[in-house]
Length: 446
Image (cartoon, rainbow, N blue to C red; front, side, top):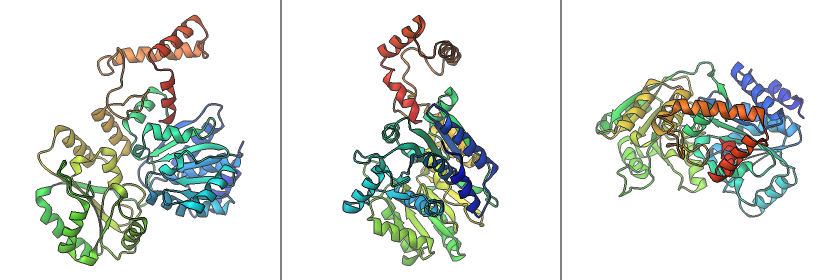
């Protein structure tokens, strides 16, 4: 087992002191890893709260104990950004870190997979490529899922099954309803990073009707003349006849005409990797002032000079996406603004989502509202929202009965943990008859 030498060495080399919340989260995670039971923990913290450092210290713990760690991110942009920040840390304490994404092909990919299988790679970062069938670990001990809301239950479970009794750590700014419900039911532990970096300013959030488009563009013209940079997010890449949403490419052309050809860049998931990299690097280098994008920039993009976020068709986004997108601004010293541009009339659900975004920047409060609006999902299945599929009970109408059932189940497990008594055997049979025995695996992936 690890004695924490690698983690201490890494902390000593940092140019800053970890926050109290980070130290507390690391202690909770290390305690879970050392326990005989598999860890199933959620690390919740708003954008910029330091989740990545906590993840790195957790990975140090399992590597020092002889295991391997994997960290999966939803986009290549985020995976490579993690690599840029974590590789110097890893190299400084003698660990081998590699990145695996869909961009890896041929001999390069084969060499990485061989090194991984032979245990030469300590930490593997990547995208969905990590849970492909030919990705084999030597001794996978810890799986970290970054931006948990972007992955399905089955995807998270596939990666966890690449090792024996693998510990799982989910990271997010806004837990999905299913995970929040798991926490409420006691089937998932939570560590909260409730301390923000010094100097971080709140982001002003405003609702703007799409009918005020010209007014918004005029405001952006003044803002970029003053040196500010802007994200403009559209939901689709191309025009859709099914959904009346403005395409990113169409908005890109419109803004170039209004603001100047060299002032506007474009990035979306259908671009070639080199084109995507160039669009991002031009924006980071301030060559372009406005970056029109799809939700590919929802996670992991860090441009401190960007202080305005425009989300077009905001009524079509979920709360987790809106919170993540807003987190792309407010990272620098300037006061930042998020404009939620909507198409009236709004549905009751859309009004509720946009209202909570105006009221708070607290990711956990936003997640609670998401749980209330969308339902908890199927805790013993793969649905991440909606109403749980109970055979008899009604979660909303029989909440008190649910509490009694929980207490009774805990008492049974306390007295008969292996379910070998007459009553325990009856519980096993009941689970089998209701097809719930295998479904309990779903609880382990958050």
